Length: 251
Length: 333
Image 1: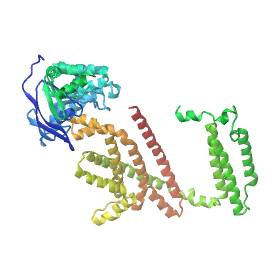
Image 2: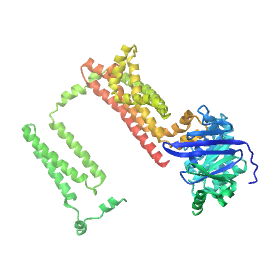
Image 3: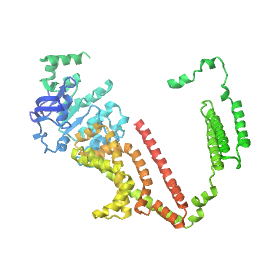
Image 4: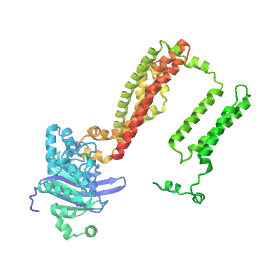
């Protein structure tokens, strides 16, 4: 990538552990995410990818370890997690748009109620974002009137409307029909080019190869291997990485 | 066409070997002939006043059995048209009523004089309508309060605090287990010993609001739980607080699951206001009882029953209609 990467650390994760009852899902994860970086998280299912992502905005409560977002340790019980979350946009596998609201209302809700901006300003901002994801004509459609790809693009616009510092994507294309994956990845690629810091759980090799600065390969709750997409895809060093990549490529 | 009805249309080997043949009991010739027979029986064989009780019983019983068998033969026949079956069914009901009227030994004059003596009701109607007004008022206020109680309890429960839940579940279980009449009597007659004296109307409203609040809370909880948990996550990930999430995301979606059972509860509550007469709330039943005692005639009670019917029948219909409408809409969404 010829993109300038700032060395300012946005998220630092130190020895993160997570248990679901007896199940040890994350077994000591440490990494740093710097401003403007696009980090892809890959790995076999059950390896803890989504859990890791969701711990970083505390949709899952971390077990032990530290997660420092812009200097604030969000594992502390005294931290105002709602405030932290306003800086972290999240896109879900199943879109999770609010079905009782139109596309533009979905986008406006959080800025109006959390950022406390006026309805007019929120509408302007929302329409600009819909323009960006190419869905201005669908502003007043309800989610069930949109295709999966369109819903996911609205969901991205909804997250962006909060003007977050960083965006999380939790398998954003895996619930989509193949012909709709491209339109979502195009939007994400554009965001990466604009310098948005992104953490993407995904198996879209093409997108990762093109847009990601770094790949984390998570297996069995540890970072099995880490490096640039070229390194990981061309010269994997770990046997498990080779097995995993072999399985995706054979599809 | 589903599998079973498809199979039902394939005639048996017996019928296949007899094309165009209808089983004799299903033929109209047979039906008309037996009808003539039954009418003849009714005209000539049904007993008059002078018959012995045993003779009457046997003769009426046989007639009723014949009429039942004749109607059943038509009603179970898939080939007969619906309007024909309808006429037969209503005819059967009519004949039964007529038999009851003629042979039950009821003294219709006396019955009319005591229970349907509308002359005795002169001047009593305004009082009854006043009672109806009180009933409606009680129901409306209690409905609003019980919905508020239910909403607050359900939202508090959704916070998932174990300590809080112990108290909330205790409230729900206790108030859903105590009969309304016991609750009202307790609040009106027992609380004064604790220094809490409530007027009868207030006691009624408190009892209804708390009792039906527990039911409303369960309806709200079912609604809240019906909303996909990803909705909550999406809202929280945007930085909305729990309460904002509840108000802006969860409740607007829950409401279509909540409305039908809630309407049903409210209609039931309107009916249950009658219990308030035991704590001397001046509602419809209480007024009817006063008139009954004052005029030494129970027509007022019948009148009250009619008023309840007139008010509640449309409401139960409305509740049903609402439920079906929301069900249809959920199917399409």
